[in-house]
Image 1 (cartoon, rainbow, N blue to C red):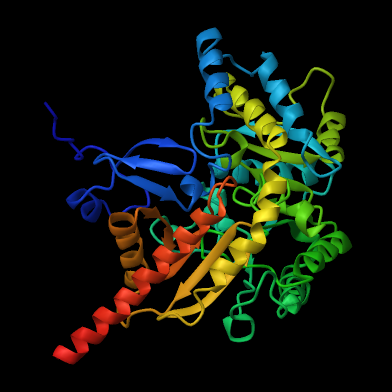
Image 2 (image 1 turned 30 degrees about the vertical axis):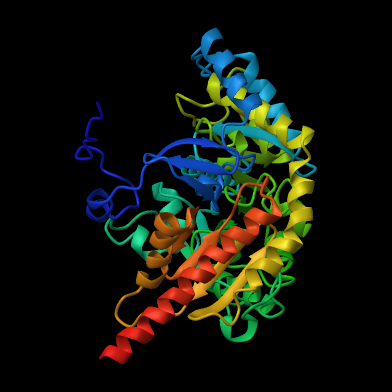
Length: 450
């Protein structure tokens, strides 16, 4: 005898709660590339969950590692104590990081990784005797998760407007999206690298570079619609930071762990930041875990500044390096290596790009942006109803096509697991194309009746 699910008590995040609860979209199991719904339908996962299940769902090696660790030791503190798996996880992560970034501070998600990195940046300058550096610079349309530090350096008004002032001394660089010049670029846009010069010419001229501690950017701005860096743009930011002694932080919560066909976007672009924030794919999203990967000399500055028996950095979380999360991270990184998933993603990227750009010319498609296994499809907005067109595509893909996509405003964002096959890529983009054509046909019919 089935029971009716009570949806009253769960206040859902980033969700239109009333709309959802009127007709819930419920996932009850997952395997590989697919979810299964409560009514028994298979749903092709075009978003790797939330940009995070890079190795596919319920990978047996990762599941087994978590199960074994849960039976062996459920929790151990890492304040003045430790357990072996936390150190093994840090070493495993350091084995795939860019050269020189080899010190790992664990946390629990992307929000905590960003707040941790910002605190490291501020404290680093202070322990070096450069305490004037208190200003943090983010970017318009940047999404650095939902801690107060992250929403301060982030550039999404909706994430901040209800909460009043956040951190003082924060400013923002203009984002590089330029559809007028770069629409339907295959890979990196050709135009816009000069926008990076505004960091020096406008922000540093306004604030004085001696007061700036760090610049934080996503190599690809994912959650606001896949905004790609123009060719040479990230290199310019790195050069400006080097010129003025400013730390460069890459928020790679989305781009880390193979999304672009490399371990990290830093490797793909050949631009080495001073810190990398990561989470999501670190454990294949099986157990929450985040990390900040730090240049060794930054770490060593803290070690040198403190007394021999003193705590060097007053920061941490109860679940830092949690045994289950550490077990998941070790197993996940082993899967990435043993199954060559990053190389596999790189090999599949050209086919993914071709399929993405097959949508050009379809109704309402104003831009397609892609790199690696990530794609943004920007749609024309219905007058007076921002976001409605893309959300309708989301609903029809889920209910009618058996495909899961993600939307942000009127932009469809795709980021499938790295194990996706060519027929699944075809299914994913065909579903979106069919829905857009049906939308257009329906609009034409309505006009004819009117």
